[in-house]
Length: 225
Image (tube, rainbow, N blue to C red; front, side, top):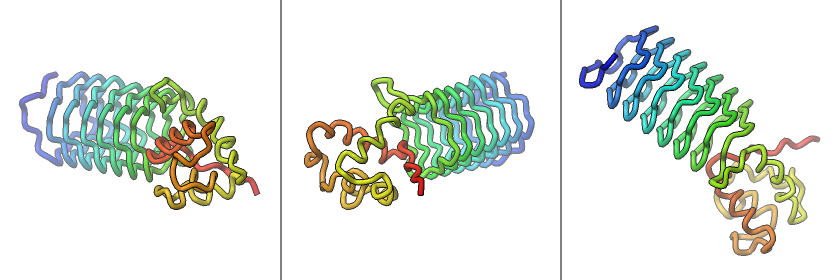
C-alpha cells in the first residue's frame, strides 16, 4: 500500500486499520486514532504523530526514523526492533510497550512514561531519558555507550564508583534528582565541584557516569534500610 502523497486529516480515525507495509513517509497524523492498527513494516519516516493514539498498535519492523511522537499514546504497543533513531518521544506514554531490540539512538525520551517497558537489547546510545519514568524498565543488554557496553555491564560498577570517595550509597542517592554540579551524585560522592577535581583513577569513570546520568540512563540505587 502506498499512501505517500495522500492527505490524511489530522485526528483521523484509523482504529484497527490495516496499514501493513504502507509508505506513510512524512504524513501528518497528529492526534490520529491508530489504536490497534497494524503498521508492521510501514515506513513512517518523518511522519508527524504528535498526540496520536497508538495504544496496542503493531509496529514491528516499521521505520520510525526521525518521527515526531511527542505526547503520543503508545501503551502496550509492539515496537520490537523498530528504527526510532532521532525520534522525538518527549512526554509520550509508552507504558508496558515492547521496545526490545529497538534502535533509539539519539532519540528524545525526556519526560516519557516508560513504566514496565521492555528495552532489552535496545540501542540507547546518546538517547535522552532525563526525567522519564523508568519504574520496572528492563534494560538488560541495552547498549548505552559507544564502545558497545551494555547497561547491565556498566551498572555493575556504579556502586563501587559512588562509594570510592568514602560516602555511602544512601548518602549519594539523596542527590539523585540534582543535575547541577553543586549537589550532583559525583559531587557528593567525592566532595568535589568539577570533574577535574575527581581523583585521577576515577575521573574517566566519573565523566561517563555524569554523561549517562544527565540522560537519565543511570537508575537510582536501591538503598536497603
